[in-house]
Image 1: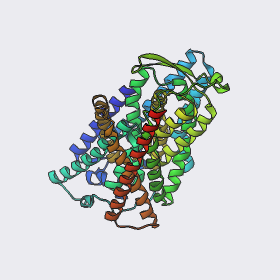
Image 2: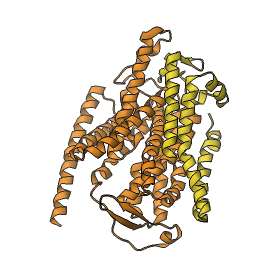
Image 3: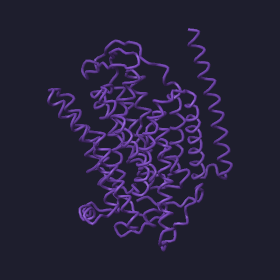
Image 4: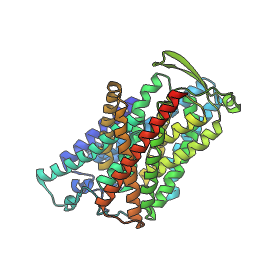
Length: 120
Length: 351
């Protein structure tokens, strides 16, 4: 499960990086700007809209593949906690079922709520 | 979005890519080389991280920020993703062997995930107010501090038996695992769950602040406070690091600290390095090789502190001098640590 998630994410990141190099650009950014991490106008994660994900994947845009790969990586450990919650529920271990849910709640807070609180 | 500083003191200046009008094969080659340079840092970080047990992020963040001139928040985000990758890669092996304790892991994750949220928010405040120097100094201090458990590791196999307390019963902290070296089943009993939670909060906080997994402090809490065997502590910590880092990484994501080029290259490199590290660990059992890695860590630690002092304007030295100081301090530390462990060894033999 864990290893599968890592393999899948690595494969997608490799594809994305290759596409980025082959095409020389991604999401209207030239490779020179994508690679230049010390430039203020380089592409970072707050500039890449999630709404463009589907279109980006269909048009073989490298940066969206890298982005997808990173999200697979990020959600891999989260899915393990979700599985643990199911496992504890089946074992009728209510205490640990609730604790698993609390952990998932914290992660959901980090993904959905905290960004809004901190603002841009 | 934090303001981006163009630090001129990068050891490897990559300013040739400033010109946006590069075309053709030579330009492509330059970016490819840059990608590979970041990957090499990742490989080194993954290698040292897996050999010392510190995980993927701890070594790669200083390598990226000190030697490749990657802004520290981009480096920290790359560190978080590296921690997820190495944790997931090695944790799958341990959970299959059933050494990691799922209950203890889940229970303590409650504290690390809250800690990492707080830590990431502090990091954002630090960066948006331009206090990046503080991160370098704290990072250096944590690197130097993490040398201590690395040195002491391998001495204690099993903890002394302790009486159960209330939390042992409530949180079901008993477990067994099969130790392949001792060829027997080992039973253990965890205690002081609340103190464990308390320390874990700070482990999470440091993870969010610095972009590391926080494994060193996890192990300390489980080994020293909750009285768990070292193997259970390290494997359970490894399982926990993934979710801690993932929680921090999602906050970093929305803040714009993920630079895709850097993170992609780093993650790929770290996984290669961790894979090589696992291979080396099984084939070489030479303890002397650990000294090389201690020196790497202490050198990076001192270098990070000095770089932080430099950026804050407290102590401005030129980079060659800084390098010299870091090397000297690293060597002195190694000699001290060497004699310290030697004296420990003598004491153990006598008693």
